[in-house]
Length: 285
Image (cartoon, rainbow, N blue to C red; front, side):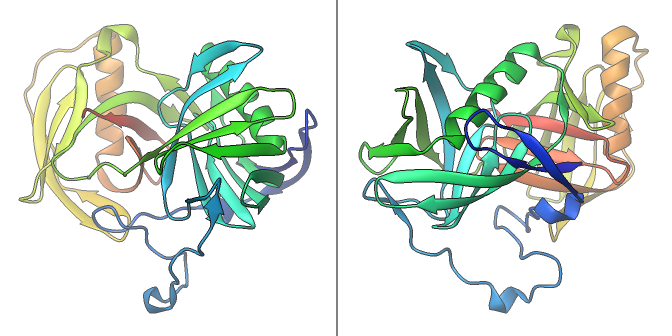
């Protein structure tokens, strides 16, 4: 579910509910982004030239590295990022929910207006707190200072800062994608502690994927096309799994059954089945 909000200051007033397709970002084969529905690939223009703090920023994935509020610096959760689409549009992720905002981007200021924001419950308490603080920080009119070509610091009127670093999207193929979260019913929650570090996917050049399910391991054929991955029958070991390991394996088998959409943003990747269940993953670089 997507909700349009006014993000000016502390006001987060729900004004409309948007369909999921309103903010859909479709990934193409490899790591290129495909055009939106109904668009001719040949008609897609390169990102508009936009400079922030004297640094070209359009078409770049800016990972949120940290945020400092009232003198206390907090490291950002995996997946938080900002993308300057044009001088009038900024989108990204607060770390759990995504946003797509009207904006005014000048050489030394970034000012976000109304945003369409996903309305997904985030189970991790610390992530929810960071997300709320980041949303408020980005909603303010921020001055921008560039440090070289790979770092930006946004400073709000109250002195709070957000640090952004330039980051290339990880490659789908050959990367070890560690599963960090499970999604269902518009809720994303972290893997149970007993299963953390035991579930991952590795997509190979020969069109197959190696899978660790949190308990059993195996592989399947994986066909990548137009922002989707079609999985063939999964063959795996047949160990008896109980508790958290069994829960994670069941969820992963559901997502890896047939066709799923995928999206890569920096070191993060999401994989979503047609029924809305999904996996959140982080690249092991």
